[in-house]
Length: 307
Image (tube, rainbow, N blue to C red; front, side, top):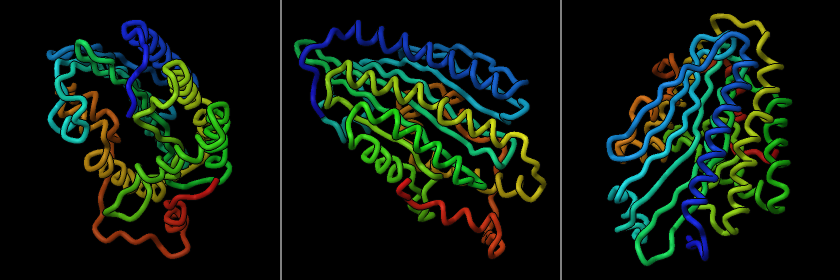
């Protein structure tokens, strides 16, 4: 991790916050149009230790069963012990963390669940240079994958990464495959996408530009998939399988997800942190998909693939 050589910290914080608030507005508006019925309800909140946010949730839309698009900006005088144990350079520093995080759970099992997150972190100490970085990404979790959809998702990711370097897509795709991996199931959570953290190897403006490209790229990647699949008919079998596979989503978020752990450890708002959970899910002991079925074929997708 490197530190900033010269950075107007307040200007940086203001610029990132302005973008994130506009990004939340744009994503909510565009998803409402794609849904055609549902509307996001906003819940503004304040954090006793410092900061706050606005959580927006959509329920029982025509397409979206439940989804959330959250903005948060929290700060404090010191990092939790779990963070400083792995990053001792943060000890004794005040911090600010802000981001937009979203998860969309559609009704139709043929529309994948999607997740995206972009965030900025800065830690300061009098007389020393600030430590800052960006993070984020987006990933797709289908239940009945279509190659056309998965290819489009990754092609969108490749296109937005290209201006930032020839290896950015490959590196951040690999990072996504490795991060969204359920070790206890020996499978990826879905078909991947992009994931990055600790991004500060470029100057601030370049890093910020990349974070913006990822945040804006989510809608380009996801909305065409919604439009292609939202009218496909489905029955009880597909719905049961969707709910079963949603259980994997819950397992990952509660066991491995860094954002969930950081939010809870820093006294974040629990309702907003756990917004990513599906409204309904199920577990079944010893489930085995019928051999040769569409449900059985999903397993072949849950491994890192060169798209």
